[in-house]
Length: 177
Ligand SMILES: [Zn+2]
Image (cartoon, rainbow, N blue to C red; front, side, top):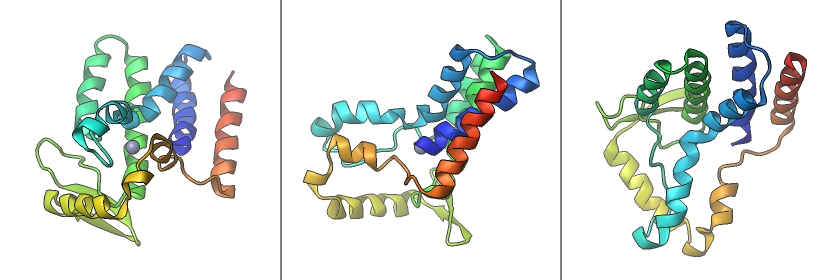
């Protein structure tokens, strides 16, 4: 999650320079919000998890769905749409490299997802994802499926590389101010 925010800061600075826009807290917050928006499925999950007996979730991890929203935003404000679209694109690229369940880049045209680990690309069919999910039902104990666990499972480790990257992103925003 914090890596998405880090990349969101870079997206904000680069896009603002490209559009010749001055610094604005509103647009910075808009970009940071967009960078974590695909993980916003977390909110309905928290509300419905008990009733629906969900253990984990990935409800809106569909890049083409957000491409359509970006297209609609273009009609309103090109700058805002670019911040939104690029922040989300970077989020999905990051997810592609960090999840083994695969990101369904071409949904609704195919339910197959793709991800990259162990130095190669993997395609994950709906069937495979479903069996991974069933497996997680057994490996994630009920008592572990708490709100705190859900949040913590989305926060990457604060290793040296990630901290340096975060500091560079903050510096780029400060220099841009
Ligand atoms: Zn995500």
